[in-house]
Length: 138
Image 1 (cartoon, rainbow, N blue to C red):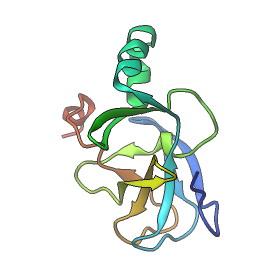
Image 2: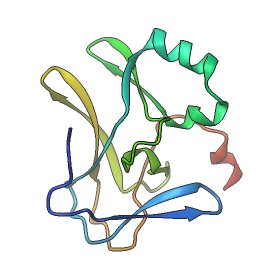
Image 3: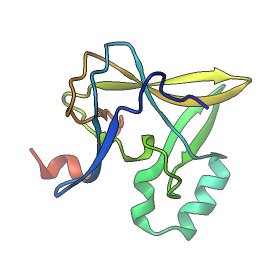
Image 4: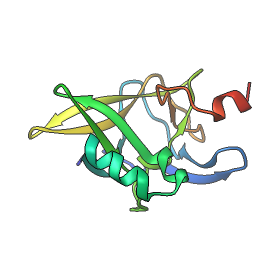
């Protein structure tokens, strides 16, 4: 598991338009590791089973990705105190990018700063798909 080095530099706010958000408590330099998107790593088959059981609001915490030619998902729907699950989508001007990191043969989805991030700035990344909320703020 990745942990930020030399900080916690985050604080959380409730946002009237996006629920919660993660904000920098200090400066973050371009290229720096920011936070890991953590949760249960599950197969596509398990994802389909959980989708039938979960409330639709949990879908926002299901991060689907390809790894070694297979479809996987990180299910971060359970509150576990990690920060990556509350980073909001910004497809126009994200300041972070998700990278897949291989650690001991397992994927870790980590956010890295695309540019310098100032204290107080919201941490965001492009979720990579078209979501209904994107049309609500145009």
